Each structure stands twice: as structure tokens, then as C-alpha cells.
Length: 388
Image 1 (cartoon, rainbow, N blue to C red):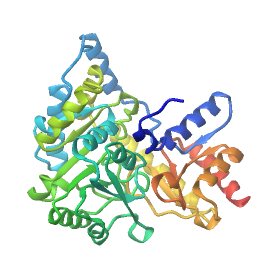
Image 2: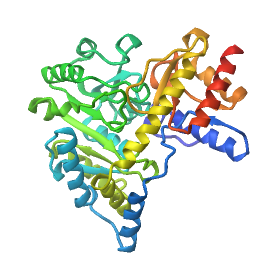
Image 3: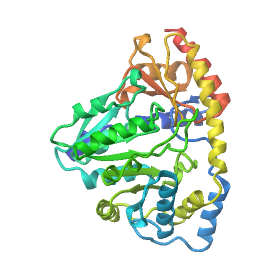
């Protein structure tokens, strides 16, 4: 028996990836599976982005690069943050990472010490608390409800703060709920963070996927005081359908970026060099593909919402961003894990149990798939619920 490091036993496997892998294996066996599990756009990466990476390959951009990222990409990211988000960063404030996930992991390792507390509103993206644990910190989970559209309130944040609190995790638009904080709500949270001298990391990976006039305000743009305590995590996976490219970034004060660069230099080193040139094209060239994908997501959102609302015992708030619905299954009297396992077994439909997001009375359904699959999957979901 191998004696593994204690830290391994403190974290859980990524259930979303495990469910997605099982669905892919079933499809490979010829089974007709409707998958609502993966947070991955079903669109191909836009052609001009692929062409930029091909050109970089042909030009020999295949060697080691700076651990913090290609200077041209870091400059393009800084420009994007200034123009789109009103955040006055320079390229020195940016590190390019292997996806948005590594940006957050590097941050936790660079910032969190043993016994430091990190406040995470639930429902949450399932990797947040696991990263805190791996960094030997303590995740402090604050449960939100549908009454506040799954948003943490300033009062809840204030009550959760202790002398050990170091970081607050903000995700808007949110995975798994699709909730979007208003400008007023962002400003109110910023006041609490400043009053208590906390850091805030704002995960903005879904910032371009918004509906019904919802607007995204990056918390660092509220004031110079909060800007100095803000860390931005973002990437190219969702808005540009570049999930497999693994290009993300972190923006923060230079001292923190230098620390994450040290960590990255001893782990993965630079992100794939020619992939970074695709990311440059994503930022600097046409944004038409972003709008086209958003139009498709908008139609899909309406179809899945209309379908769920016809199913007895299920309900869900309208998501204002991202591409998920977080459906309440509490009236079925079944745990989210049992619900999802039985749904896959009997109807060949994959969903993610809300338990992994910190809320066991819900399931997450991703509508980052085609309309035919959504309609068929919702019909099967209705049959499943009617059989309970």
C-alpha cells in the first residue's frame, strides 16, 4: 500500500469531469446519451484563431517561452482589461496560465497560508474549495438561496469574516447558477472587502455570456481602493470556445504576479507557445463569433427554461449569464447524487448533482449543446420525473 500525501485525501475528484468521461464512454459504445454535464461550448474554435495558431507553427513558434507568457499576449490582455473592464493593468500585472483553472490554483498557492480562511459563496464552482485545501487553507462556505438569486449579501459576507479571513471568491456570471451581480451589489461587496482589508479574486471566465441586458462590472473597477485588493482570473475557453487550448490568465498587483510566476516556472513553465498566438488573435481580431455563440446560447436558454417549467416538481431561476440552469429538485425528495445516477441509468441523460457545488437540492444542466439534444434530453428528464 502506497502512503500518499495527506493533502490528497483532503480533496475530492472532479465529479463534472468524471460524469463527462462516463457519458463519452457510453457514446463510444453507441449508446444515445443526452449530455447536460459539460461546461464546454459545442462550437468549433473560430477559424481566424486557428489560422493564427497555424501561422505561428509555420513561423517556428514552437520553443520555450517566458513562464509568464508571450509579451505580446500579456500586452493584449492588459489592453483588453483597460478597454473592456476599466482596469488599469500593465503587462507586468499579467501572467498567462494553462487555463483559468491554473490561474486560480497558482493564486491559492501564492497567497494562502495554513489556517488562512477563504470565503466562498455556495453554490460554487466545485474546484474553489479543493484548491484552498491543497494550499493548506480553510474554505468557509456561505450558503445562498433563491431568495437572493444565489448571491451572497454584504451582511452574509460581513458575518463570515474572522481574523483569519484572507480572501473572498467572487464569480459573476456564476457557474453553476448563471447568476450575475448588479453594479449596486458589486459596489456593496467592495465596501465590506475594503473595510476588512481582504483580498478578492474575481473569476470572470463567463463575462461575455450575458442575457436580457445584464451587464458585467469587474469589482476592481469600482474604486482605486478595491482595485488594489482585486485579483482577476479569466481565460479564453468559454467566450471563444477554446477549452482544449488551455489558455487563461491572472491579473493582479505585480508582487503577487511575480510570486505566481515563480510557482509556474517550477511546475508547467510557459503555456503552449503557438496556442498563445491563437489567443492574441482572439483578443485583437473580429469578435463576431462571440456574438454568434451568444445568440445561440440565448435561444437554447429559453428552450431549456420552457422545458423545465413544464415538469412537475422542478423549478429554477432564470440565469442571466453563463450557459447553465440550476434546477431545484427538492420536491422529488431525492438527493442530487441519486437523482443524477438514476437519470443516467434509466434515461441516458447526464446532469451534475448540486451536491458537488455545495447545494444538494439542485442539479446543474449545461445548455452548451445543440437544440435537438436539449429538446430530447428535457423530454427524457420529464419522463424520469413522472416515473418517481
